[in-house]
Image 1 (cartoon, rainbow, N blue to C red):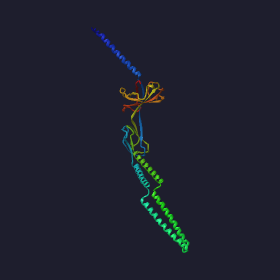
Image 2 (cartoon, rainbow, N blue to C red):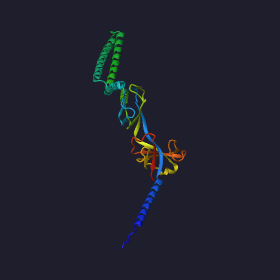
Image 3 (cartoon, rainbow, N blue to C red):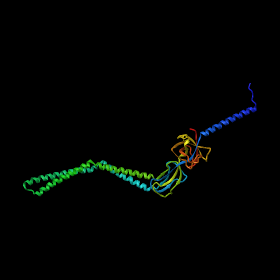
Image 4 (tube, rainbow, N blue to C red):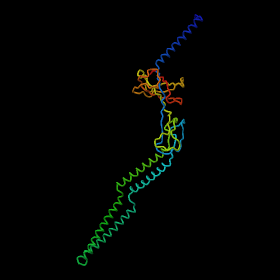
Length: 331
C-alpha cells in the first residue's frame, strides 16, 4: 500500500530537483562558454576603381554615388564618333589588302597570260623573218653583191629578235607561274596586320562603354559629363557586394583552434542578438603585431595571425571597417 508523502516534503523535493536541473544547465553553459573562442576584427568589403581604357570625351554618366549596380551594367559612355571613324578606316584597309591577297593567290589575269603568249608568237615570227633575211644576205655576200654594212645589220637584227623572243618567253613563264612566294607571303602578312588593326580599332570602340565589373554600390564619382579623359582616369569607385569578409586576428595559443572551413558567428553592435554566419576562409602563415584598430581585451603588442572570415549571409548593414566580434566553437 503506497504511503502518501506530506505536502511540505513533496514541495521540498520538487524544489531540490529544480535547483539540481538549473545547476546542471548553468554548469553546462559555463563549460560551453569556456570551450568557445571569441575573437575581434573588422569588416573588409572589397572596392574597385574603374575607368575607360581609351581616351575621349564623357558623353553620359548613368549612375551616381549611392546607386546600386549589377555586373555588366553600363555605367558611363564616351563619345564614340572619333573611334567609329578609326574603326571604319581600319576595316576598309583590311578589305583592300584582302582583295590584294586574293589577286596574289590566284596569279595573273588570263588576259595578261593570253597577251604574253601573243607576244611570244609575234617575236617568234620576227625572229624567223630576221633569220631568213640574214640567210639571203649571206648568199649575196658570197657573190660580192651586198655591202658588209648591210650584212652586219642583218646579223644585228637576227640577234635582237632572239633577245626579244627570250624576254617574251621569260615574261610568259612568269605570268603562267604566278606571283613569287615571297610576294604572296608579304601580301598575307600585310593583310593579317590590317585585320589585327581593325580588330584593335573595334575593341577600342567597344571600350567607349564602361561596364560595372560586379554587383555593388557606387561610392564615388570622380568626373562630370563633357570631361576630356585620358585612358585609365578613375571614373567610379564601387563597393562590391560579394564577397564580404571580416578580418580577425588569432594569438598563437589559440591558433590550433582556428582552421579553414570552420563555421563561426559574427556579432556587431548594431544587432547583438542576431549574429551573421560565416566560415574561416584563410589563416595567414606569418605572424604580425596586433593592429591598433583591433580592440581586444588581451595585450595589444602580442603577435597574432591574421585570418579571413567569409560572411555567408551579409547584408547592407555590414559596412566597411565595422568592428565585429567572432565566436568560434570547439573544433
